[in-house]
Length: 290
Image 1 (cartoon, rainbow, N blue to C red):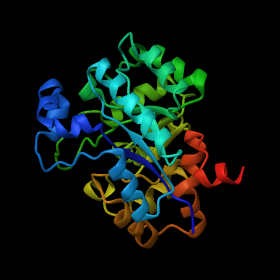
Image 2: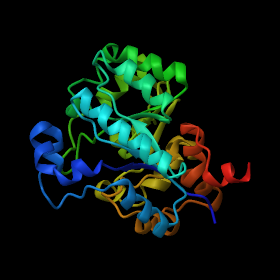
Image 3: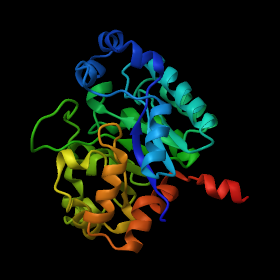
């Protein structure tokens, strides 16, 4: 079987799951997304069970784009411990408030604790603007020095509204890419449709180090988005990602295998190899072999 890396999931410390209402009061964006008790919050244990059922080798877990740097550090500590307890089956991304003075030190601390990147950064949630990239310079420099990518929430300027959609549109996000073209960036949710603008030469010129993940695909696009995006930007720049628990991992993975229109060789890249390269991952089976 082809190895599988789910490049975008979310897990939370048990205290946040238990005390949802209190955290909704502490963070405006968290309240917007999780004020409805039907919106799922899951722990590392629930993610591990889902991975086992779905046949996923590694999941890259993000926390939440808290506006408070203390909450970011608290969540990062949980993710680091979850990764250690999983034997590496759960990799993790560190959250920072990217324009805050604490961001560089928290990024350094998180990389030392095993984070494979920074994210999911969210401009609307955290109070910064992708179109004013200089305010993020210090954080970017830490990622550049560590050789680690940044994963960003990017949303669609058109289409239906939904909780958490926000205004991080491609025309704003591309300003960040213009300012830092050498840093590897992962644009979540198909980059808000940015792959389609890569048909424009001036856009393609600044996206050469940009990679797209498929998080929450079925809420946003027809399933043909996989074939279309691969044809537009190249198969090496697409990552399989569920946004679990937004999507069920097993069902989404099976649909990608059956309905994406990708060849077996393309699936090898999209389902695992691209994420392993971008996030510099070692799969558990490789560690066992050594």
